[in-house]
Image 1 (cartoon, rainbow, N blue to C red):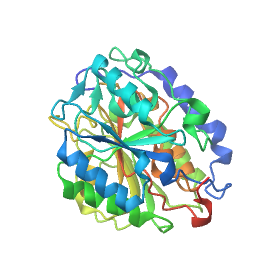
Image 2 (cartoon, rainbow, N blue to C red; image 1 turned 90 degrees about the horizontal axis):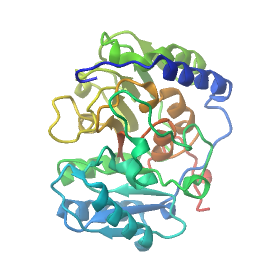
Image 3 (tube, helix red, strand yellow; image 1 turned 60 degrees about the horizontal axis):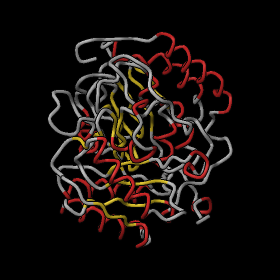
Image 4 (spheres, rainbow, N blue to C red; image 1 turned 45 degrees about the horizontal axis):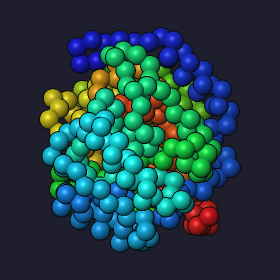
Length: 353
């Protein structure tokens, strides 16, 4: 998308058909789902990064995570990317430390955000695999967790969905964590905003938006809009759009647990990109975002599908579960946010399993 716009019609049709097939069961009134618990999440710390250590300590305290779930690695915290070889060593060390009950990981650093040609969150989730990468405009390996009712992804698929608590300072990440914790069980009365912008290439997934709004009519406010931004909205729970840079994001109020992203080529390049990066959503008040770390082209399957995300989040899944289930081809994108946020869960559905 940076220099070459490539649109794969076959992929669009396949994803669209998938949306239609499950549309009948996408109602938020459908059977509630429990979410992952603190005992099922492991925190990965880079001991060579003082900010990572501080974030991990704070997060463990806020989420009351078991000490056994704090896992330690040590590597260069200044490089944007790990090599495949270096990552293989770290992954082996991590696997050896991980308790059997752990179903997901949360990383506690800004850099590195990539492993060779794929995102660091997918690399830790499923292991490095060249099939997750693509030579410019190609399909990549698909996630078995996509649109799944699985409550234990590692047990079911041998994948541990991974998210990173990233920010430029401890205060930024602290605010992110606090928003996630504050969201729990609040059942906020918010809205979803799905924008088809004037950037046609980056609005490739907007073909789904009218159907999503129709599906949720009378159940959850979903606003399909043909404009480049929103502003002065006090109820933003979901915001999905497509632009290189989204204006006015700091002029809205994002409810605790809110998720927002923009489909573009380099949103997940967390430092040094000439495009808006997804940390801007978190600074504005969102609790999670998702973006590409390498050129994905504008295939909708490589970005969050809002219909899938709403389906699982509104039914009570945690943020990490809903976000991961919404991306069919996650190899080139990074998930950033507070993983255990669960605004639509009931305390009775969140018991330790």
